[in-house]
Image (cartoon, rainbow, N blue to C red; front, side, top):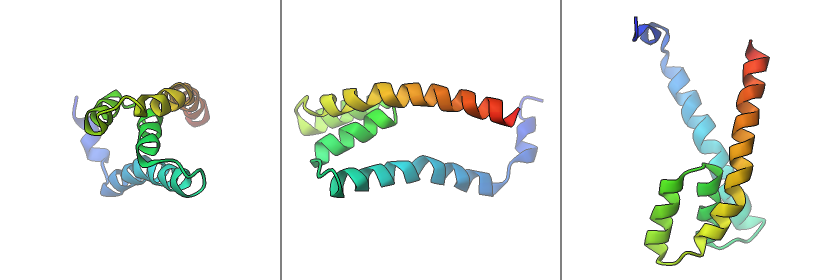
Length: 96
């Protein structure tokens, strides 16, 4: 009943999920590093904002011992959050 979805699980779906999750972050990191020439902390701060991950921001601030990474996080977080909502609605409309 509640775990009925397990019968439809295929291992390839797990790997699709890994690729969909990791690939955009790797591409964003490489783009920011090589094209935009961003510093490591600002680059990681913007990626944390792109993931909408507040715990990642806290870890970066703690590790860097400065709040400078918060500006890169704050610049990307709203765009990522709005995009997340719009894309999920688009996928629902597309797949239903």
